[in-house]
Image (cartoon, rainbow, N blue to C red):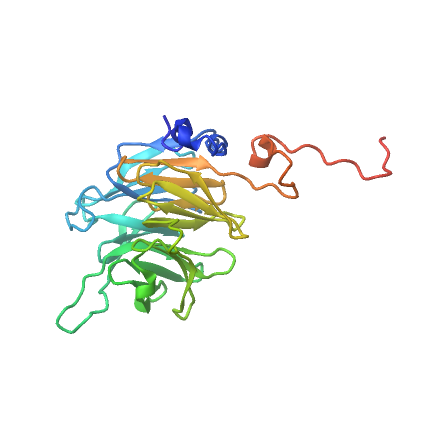
Length: 337
């Protein structure tokens, strides 16, 4: 049974009826990938239309060179469980976490190193070791990268959870700089660039907050837990759909949240086994979620927001893209021929 869809059988979730509609996708049905080993991130390839899933396969902070990356075809079918595998040939891959695809290169956050692999052959094309800002000259820190994202303008951004730091990498020169080091980031894990505003969004593992980071490195808190309300615990992933809705995954509570443009929050799935660094395939309107402790990952169709429908008016399957919308009424005064 699907990890996402089985939650509707729980008596406490009968009100979340929307999830029963979410299971249908443009690819035909929800797709589950198994035989993974502590999967961390699940992303799509905008050019070749396939998908990649990173598996830590061991301790998340250990340089054991046995991590691997799975490749799926455009229909979600398994092409190669270990398309890229640490220890095979000249590949070094310890504990792959967050990923981003830029043209024909898959960038992977791997402990203290940003690695790049050819999306067609899996061959290594980039190795960039990152050092965290030292707290003192005698205590240098090793970076602990958790995610990587692309801004569409030639720059990658990497989050360093332990050092509360976000790095910027210029792909043209392959040079690295520190965008910001700030305790307010509270253990930054997931990163994404807002598809409309271009602002960098970071979610927090330590305090369950969502922050916006400007190109100058100014951190602005967007959402956080309060004394009276503790909505989030340990956030792992964040992304946006084509309409500008934000999705975040809470690893500890097992929930996936959606925040609409008018800042309303809705749980679209709960009782999930450790949802990880999710992402959205905007072209196909799919949500991609890895489940670390279940050693599996799933892709499912997302709700298509209806427009111009009152809150009292009942939604139909057309609002979710599964049947054609009804024909619009003819303008007043028009005649049929």
